[in-house]
Image 1 (cartoon, helix red, strand yellow):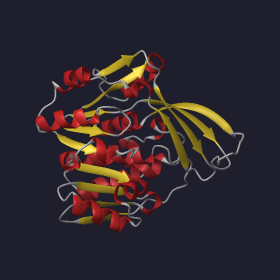
Image 2: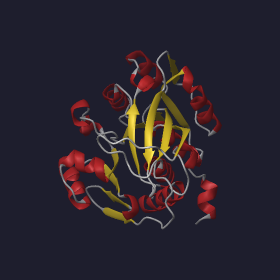
Image 3: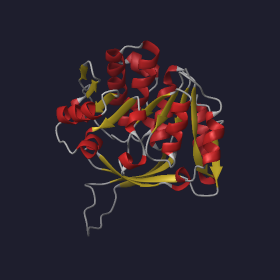
Image 4: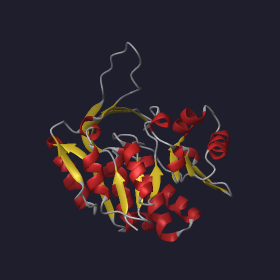
Amino acid sequence: MKFLNYGSLNIDKIYEVEHFVRAKETCASLSYYELPGGKGLNQSIALARLNIPVYHAGKIGKDGLFLKDLLENQGVNTKYLQISDEVSGHAIIQVDQQGENCILLYGGANQTITSDEIKMTFKDFSKGDCLFLQNEVNRIDEMINLAKEKEMLVVLNPSPVNNIKEKISFEQIDYLILNEVEGQALTNQEKPEKILETLIQEYPHIKIILTLGSQGAIYQDCQQIIRQSAYPCSCLDTTGAGDTFTGFFFSVYFTSNDISYALKKAAQASSLAITRKGGASAIPTWQELEKNN
């Protein structure tokens, strides 16, 4: 099995603040720093922690060449990564004193992927391989259609939600991993149990993982529900927690075929990630997980 992550690569511009800026308010930040990021990049690094073949496809500007170098240094194959004349995508991230964040995205090169580039990339993938998608790049509908033509599995992290139901057919999705806010937006339900119930009723074929931050995570399909508690830790920055969980869950699950074990390792990994600053830079290694077991 090969993993193809057709995902975003961003430059994260991070501002530490006393509280999130409100409408009509001007605030001074406590600090500023830049880090590599993007849901796609973060998830590729996390997926590669178990030495599974991970290929990252996407697009960066010349200002983002260091992102390509980072992926390669982390064991991710970048042969399908394209260079654009547009600037790289970036994120403006506020992190408050509790480690919570809010994020403003500019798509940049992430939004310039062409149909020809997609077709060339998919030539090397086939039945049994797995496509990972977020909603930070353009043409994800074309990517999903090609993946299903080739009988690949499709994992979707619908973030940001942004009218995603109008872009794609969820009938083509095999695995859906999302957080509580995204679940609420997709279902108009508030409680986790209702979110899952609504999604399963509408898409009974999809295997769903709902992440709940400090409340852990829930896996549900048409036959079973499995709950996973969060591991206690001192939270510094939640920026890469969800991406870390996603990468570790699927790399462990697809190598072990054990949902409970995959949930456990993903929860451990994300609990370690939030004790550190940043997204990609906070993702733990498998060895760190084993030490903290």
